[in-house]
Length: 401
Image 1 (cartoon, rainbow, N blue to C red):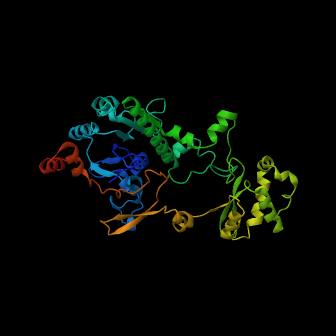
Image 2 (cartoon, rainbow, N blue to C red):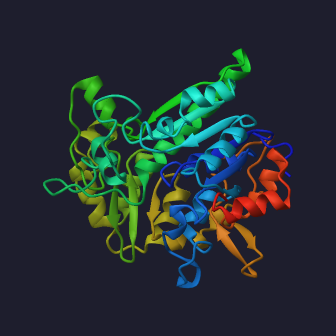
Image 3 (tube, rainbow, N blue to C red):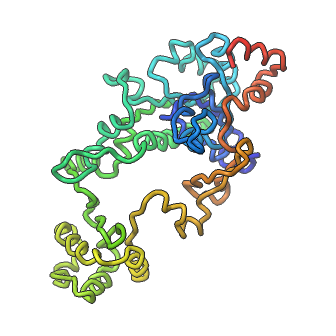
């Protein structure tokens, strides 16, 4: 089914909650057989909305669907000895385990690194925790907001002189997932070289700090603490302005001559025609005044009209739109970005975001819709353990699966 995919043949056991499920999702997108191991009642992410047609149900969560596309579902009660025994047997045939329990939880259950490594020396264990497996904060709890704050993301987000603003969405969790996936690929390359697995200790706080492009670099490189600048980019070459009917992102890079001639032609250039503005460093140094002039210029323009002409002049302007507007975006449509995924049990298709990357030899694709709760339990246990119908029924009756 996933023949020719970049990670075809890789078996992954995903024990993570929603903080780590995007990492496993990206591996599944590359063709790995990712088994989402969840309690018999279903993973907690299944109870997070929004839900299809606003009808709450563990198999209708759009939140769960996004993070678990392309995976299979195995229900297994890891709080019971028999459940832990079955998981350990599955580990022997796996390449990777992804987990996001609090540090020490798996070890106390007999499923820590030592036990997993003894069962499968080639196994890679990825542990995702707010502050990693060691250090003074290892036992502290943290959600996305705390991680964004301690990673430096929150402090620089907002307007000068005002309180910081929480970043939209779950950016700290996502940054952690991206770095986790990179770490897994590096561990796979290392295993190809020496045949041994390894334990990846992923600190979400460190990953978040690494994802903020300028904060750490400014501090450790120049000893400078970055401030909040509103929509002014830290490079000082971009800022968002308000048009007549929406928002536009100004850019003072690109063809400056074309930009200033356009503004001057509209009689709005003020002092921007002076020769010193031809210097890109001068434009950055005096960015606040420059963008104030440009804001005054665009306030009566239609946003789309402005964008079209800017692109014609090879000026890297962009519009700022509401998320739902992306569904009608011409560029995304031309690239085939959104994909329709069939949900036969609902009798309909659901549109999903598509590939976050483009591989020539092993293109991104949908292999299966997100799984129903425990949908593949019998299939997986027959494959891995050879359980027959009677054994599966006994496990179900005991609440193990």
